[in-house]
Image (cartoon, rainbow, N blue to C red; front, side, top):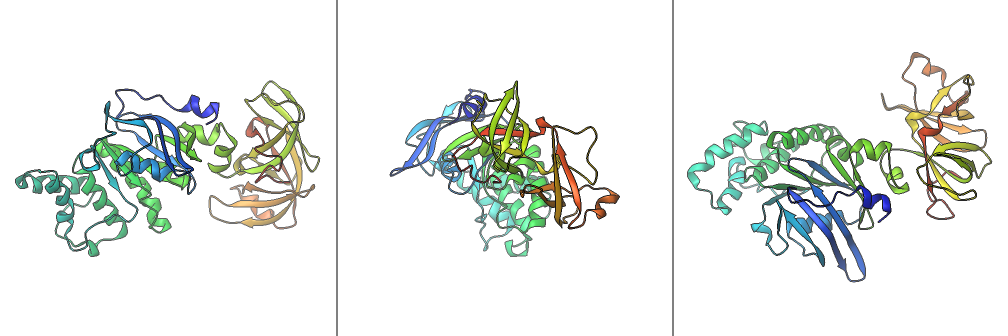
Length: 383
């Protein structure tokens, strides 16, 4: 783990709903989770974001008790649950495929956990009605599961868990099987439910949009470790590592070499001989290979050269317009041959930006980020 990641991870505290200390898990020679520590306060929405194979599902299964860590500890409300079986832990889990019982009604699905936990049957009806009202499904108790829409099934699966009032609800990519529009709706609904029940959610996803929209805190995981833990805004605008900068949000990337550094402004030259200025909190010596990250939305696109000229200004030619409503982008090629994306200006004159049109791209030094290259080849960067 980088120094940045260590500094970002909050040390476990007794008052936290969930805390892990130096949690590790290996499968043979492969390290799935490597010395992970974090702490989640009561009622927070905490997401673990990372690519497939980074260790996030293994971490979730250890929290649930389905897998035993090789080392470290798991505390729920200040008490270790390391040797507590899954059915005795104050946690519940929503799976990607929901695992609802198709031969049972909605009410029977929700009552299943109440029966297993020994809740008296006379209390079931009131508890089921209460939780169905909170998930916006009042009166649905007698409906069959196959009568529900995808979003309604999601809410029943969550209701079945939350009716037991767990200290922590674990969610393993529960929106993965939904279509795009329903997924967008359920992101808002999940956040509402988390606030309504005031329950700590731990949410696993590889979808950065899900993590950014719903979470109070996000941990970006890579190769079994947390690269950075922070608010969605911190991860997007202040990434601490090149991996976080590339994985969270869209970025144009340049392979470059440091020429000079004044305070936190770094002057670089790309492999195509373009001088660019950017921002870095790191001390980068002259000659050091770096990767530059520039968000598409910070790039200003104009048909005239800006006056005064900003820190970075490139002549370019429009290749194509990638129309997607408010998220539309313009693909351009600089005079040096680099292909970049910029956010399409949402103004009336954007129609003038047709393929073949000459334009100028500009942005300030502090709007670009600079990190030491992870290899001499600068993987993923524009040559």
